[in-house]
Amino acid sequence: MALGDLERDIMRQLWDAAEPLTVRQVHERLSGERGLAYTTVMTVLDRLAKKGVVTQQKADRAYRYAPAQSREEMTAALMLDALGTAPDDAARDAALAHFVGRIDPSALEAAIEAAKRRP
Image (cartoon, rainbow, N blue to C red; front, side):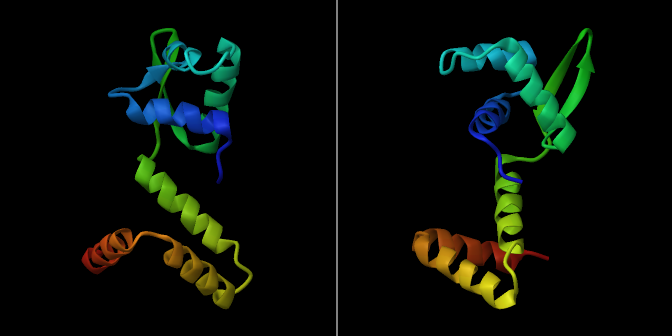
């Protein structure tokens, strides 16, 4: 599931935080970058929770939000989702080959090593 610009900015704040954040905390962190209404941030966080992208924890009168997956896990899931849209195995393999051809060789080596360690 691809994220929009604002969703990505909100997720960046949550991933960079040491602990779950309230809507107000996310809003304050984004205020320097964007002119957003508090209710906009609240709505986006609620939608992300309904999609299962963030977890929502009740804390007194407010909710605290945390990523449901690490940045790396979510990126991998997005890549697998994109590959899964290929009409057949040949198209998927061609897309994967094209992707691999565009990444840095050291990143490719790291991916191969990680795949070898996979149980």
